[in-house]
Image (tube, rainbow over all chains, first blue to last red; front, side, top):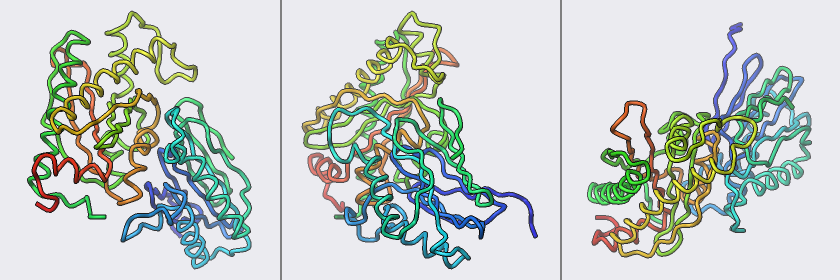
Length: 165
Length: 212
């Protein structure tokens, strides 16, 4: 078996899955939320870089289902289960959903971070997937790395250092 | 809604001209502000996927200083003035007497430093928008300037939320300005991100058919 550790990178409005010993990463989360779903004993994990809360907001014909909380989570669960994860064993960790600029306006689009977090929590509740840890809100950008072997989510910020949840 | 990611050559030319006029005016303001000659590069019009937006300024994790203005009125959108951390620090040093600060430290830089950055952004993006508004005769009002010093991905996504509801591509009118007098001078990028609904309006007032 190839034991070189690779880091699978997930871009904005995209998702992917990873198996140990490899890691999965997404960079520069602001109002977006990184959703990690994993089956710890099978050592498999999926990560979605969610940009918007709800695909029903989509005004687009060829919709990118990885962009929205609801559709990305549906897809991620399916993909994980075809790759050895068991639906009942899935757990979740979340990071992101910050507000990068301090707006005075109450425009909904400006509060997209908290709305993303809410939509994700609601969707996971429907599936009965527990959120075991999260680092959300605030006003810092985050880069996250997940290790499916340990279940650790490492969160890096520009000026508030590193955190593992 | 029509696909805004397919632009004709004429439409591209018009958007480039818009960048030229906006950034040209902003460069003049910058030049007055720091009392140096400022050069402006030919604007580029980029139709890019969201992750490529971050790549345009060094990748999603690169720390940047982003000053953003929201445009309301007849043609809405966002204008960013983007600087690297070092450039922003040298800009602040050249317009204030503050020398002992660090924009990336864990404690907030003092209020004078932050307001110098915001005010610079305000002047520059304000003159950008004024020039656009005059050129197109479309009413465009700038918001107050918003400042964020953080990862490029996190800072720029704010400007993509509006467009992301319609497509997975952003049209960015990018203009670089340089302080031509010193090698380590100020380089900044203006990103103008019109909202999807703004494009047909801009094209119409400038006499270009939507699918021309």
